[in-house]
Length: 594
Image 1 (spheres, one colour):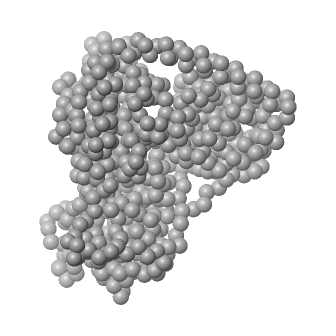
Image 2 (cartoon, rainbow, N blue to C red; image 1 turned 60 degrees about the horizontal axis):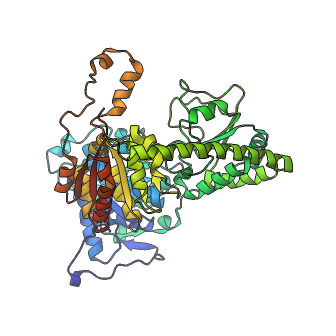
Image 3 (cartoon, rainbow, N blue to C red; image 1 turned 120 degrees about the vertical axis):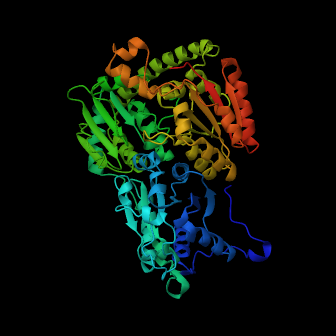
């Protein structure tokens, strides 16, 4: 588990965990914030310190020394790792955790992982320092370094304003008991997302009245109860599904609630509805016979389409539904308020928590399940199942050749890993252009066994794996990342955090020698252009890449480079053995170079 502040036995009284008390001791605003966060259910603080976070650091030590419970400290060398780790922890637990960074530059270093938390709906509480207000030294925490003038920007909150669900400057110690629980509630209420608070040192060091903080609001503040949907809308949608000749469901982030997966499968099997999983979390078990092989073909053929928590159901310039197709939507955020241009046609948008709404929709469908309807649905289900079985047989046949193909095929990476991971292992997917090939053979079936950022910001997978392992310490955690994603993920900081927090995980680097995601648009927009003719793609290829395995070894992790496909299974075994022994592991798997 993560590191905790330690003290000599004589200075370490038993931790107080009385959940019924209405107040808690707090000598400073920083201590009050920590007491309120603990009362609100925050268990970990992912910390990258600066001069303005000193009161938080002192409060962690002081409260622990008094026997008060404080969030478990996870030290992070770089802010984006802290943000990704909190995101990963939330995906498993649905409990927002605290990320502490300093002023404007620390906030900027959160980088694309703030975007990922917003777009991927991850509840995270960010607390950033702020340049001190005062300069004369009359108040504790007043400015005492030149950088505090340089870091005093005009709109620090503006750095994350477009990405935070809620943002506020903590300007008074006497309102902390209201604002801190509100921040946690905002982050934990769907649609989930990051919240951002700032606090200057003067506030963090100011004593609350009576050296106590009121826990009453924190004890009573809970996430919002989500809607199960409108029954009349379900009746309309059930009628459409009952009458459909080619129904199709497209799932995006539905699997954020693992229980929703079985509800979706039950509905699909009842009406013989094909399913598209859009590479977010696991929304459909990989072996399910109604899972489509070609999403574009299924979309073009469908006469009823059900969108489930999906941001981008299809790319209009590549495929569009047939004219007259009925389109319904179940989504906690059907308006997609944070996406400026959305524009997908929806005939029946229903705001609801899909994990609850699918139960109501199933009941409505059953009311339309007469004898002839069930026969028609079963015949369609059998037809789709037969086609899926034939496709799976062809895939299995192709695997024999992939086992020995050099360079290593991405499909073989998925298959070799599938043979060695426990059924309940958690795979974090940040493979980008290799994702379809890997997932085709990865064979994950249990809900919650594949997680993703749910957003395109790269540099998430390594830090998120630290958080996932902290949240699920008894499960094997594996990160699948491209070589670009590996570099973006600050591997030195991420692997060090894994070692410090005793949260080891296995990483497979899908090394194709560059940014394939940046090469593909050049070929797409200029298929016969100069770049293709010259085989030159500026800024895309890594001609002299780092030694990723050696980098891993420098960070207390096991590292190995794998070039031969026949060597891959044993290398995975060695990596997993290292993880089981408490050491993070990195396998640099060399694919065809772009």
